[in-house]
Image (cartoon, rainbow, N blue to C red; front, side):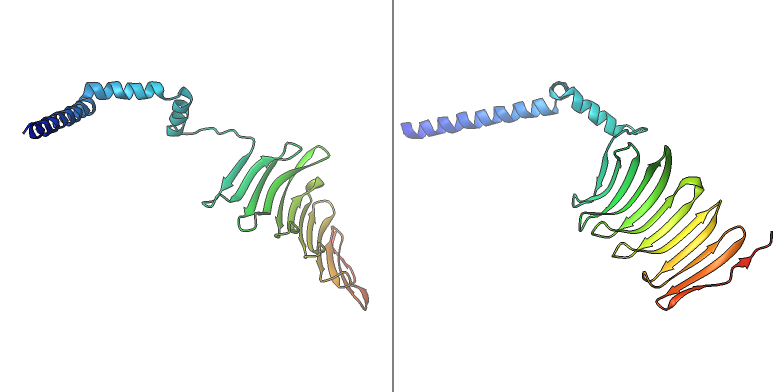
Length: 204
């Protein structure tokens, strides 16, 4: 009989303790006063630097200044990079994420104190396949290379000297069309020899 009374007493005490904890939890979380105090406490614990970062994220970014910017895809593979080269000039590169190789670069080169833009496209081995650049005097060059790094197609436009188109199948077979202010000339070269088409004199 005494054992049964003891068990009843223990059950009563346990249920009362759980009820008290539940009531305290509800009061602390549902009462606005306690909820506000809890929120203020969490804000005091949070680092001021974290608060500044969160505020910056929420605000519209009008200016972003970085020295080196990399863009990754969903697989955390590098696909684009914006940086400065050794001369402090900008370079924008695009990468093939499968091979982690640079495939295209848009940049500016320094030539005797003057800045000229260029665009190059590369294969997986880093060899330049196509090159578009502006040079001194306003000349523009578009060049294509083969896998052996040989120049096979070249288009040149020069405001002072005229224009040239070079088509080369190999070192022994190629043709050149050149036009300036006075003449136009077509040169054909094959293993059998070199043939020059008679220049056409343009009107003055």
